Length: 249
Image (cartoon, rainbow, N blue to C red; front, side):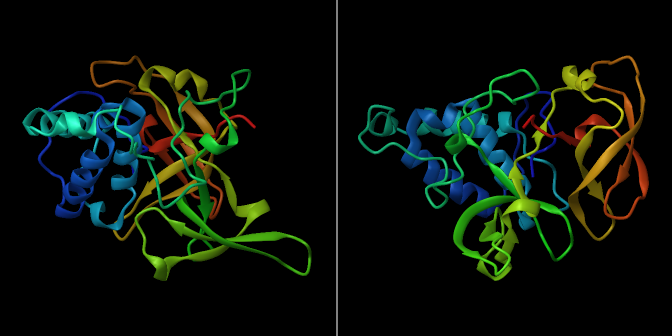
């Protein structure tokens, strides 16, 4: 569930068996592409949003990249899966509509990536929280004329598939911010906030109510953001690492 940005590079040994199995497969299929920054960010996001990582340390994209780098160094057949190989890996072969973004986050005045490069998130009707979309499985039209899509969420199985309203509950994926980008967040902004509770850790829409700007240190942004959750109007003070910014439309 990587909305939590990496700060430093260090050896990470906390991958689960399922994560290592997936990375082994990706290593075989993608070759040197697995060292690409965007590629590694996508993999770390998928890992961190899965059920199996709840309560475990956040996987940083640099840790994924480091794993792939070490795996390539130890693989005598790594040349067989180079970028020139005829079988290149697509980041999400099971989700053709959900390709990894190849460009930087789109804020007001900046270029918006092509539609097919966008990732999406959808609001679950079960808890009102937002989850990354893994695949668009089917669609239908209601008597009102509104469209719905049957979705599979990243990290969840078919038993958690949902029909979701296109207009009200599907949107381009919210984006994490680097520590140096905290100045982009303003009072009144809609954000996606990682809510941590004893029994759950999920993302809800919220609005920025107040910002306490603080001097950054070696740990990064130390500012405090008072947010108000849209679903229940409760307020909480959080740090930047728990916020995701909405891309410009």
